[in-house]
Image (cartoon, rainbow, N blue to C red; front, side, top):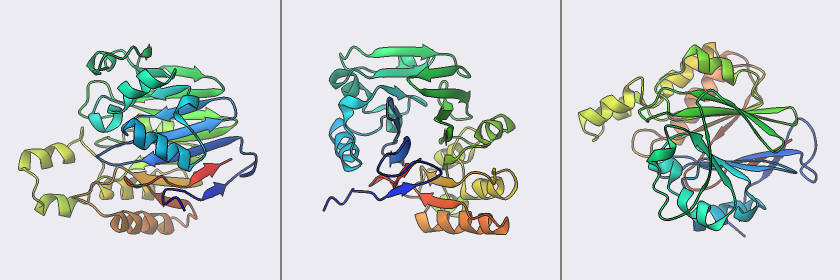
Amino acid sequence: MNPLASPVLSCYKGSKENPIVKFCVLASGSSGNCALLATDRTRILIDAGLSFKELSRRLASIGEQPDRIDAVLVTHEHCDHISGLPRIAKKTSASIYLTHHTAPLIDWENATPRLERFQAGARLSIGDIEIDSFTIPHDAIDPVGYRLRAEGINVGVVTDLGYIPDSIKFHLRQSHVLLLESNHDLEILRVGSYPWAVKQRVMSRNGHLSNDAVNDYLCHEFDSSTATLILGHISEHNNHPEIVRTVAQQALERRGLATNLVIASQKEPTAVFTF
């Protein structure tokens, strides 16, 4: 049995036999990030931080393959989000969507990518999927998050951000599925072995979201209509999945929400959420 094989969760409409839309987080963490949104007509990766071999393996575990990918949406230039891009550009015909300021920072290793550059804040259309991009606060050149819409299903993807401004809260409303960062536990980070300068960077408003920040968002701003919340980009050294789960579950319970809570992993894909 394939240890990476994931269960399929059927939600809202359609069925696992004939899904209209499916979403899966293939990997999330400081060593590599990648997610898939697919319809019958269009398949999009959000980030490409896995090797081509590992990407192929994880796609195969959910019944997909790299040569069927139509496009890759890039959030920013940090290596855990783009390390697999050159091989994707060489081995597939996928178009690479990234901002004008991010594009010059990618080392394509002699590949000839099919680039589609855009301004942060632009609305994109790829096949039957519409995408809103929006600026996020992170220490990259021009980082963005995405809200994707397909067949009436809204998926929000926002990781690598130091805090959640009102503009981002607006974009995340009415998401059926939300992938959100819960990077570090503040106390573990403070007493840990990282140099103080790195700790300051992580905790800054251009760093990463703490469990406490996520707790505050869930208690006060999280849209109660969101059916599935996926928490990811969890620090291997300064957090633990069970701490993340406990903090988030308590926040949801305080509001009386029965949101499906999922913790994304660096090591294996999440369930495949089908609609």
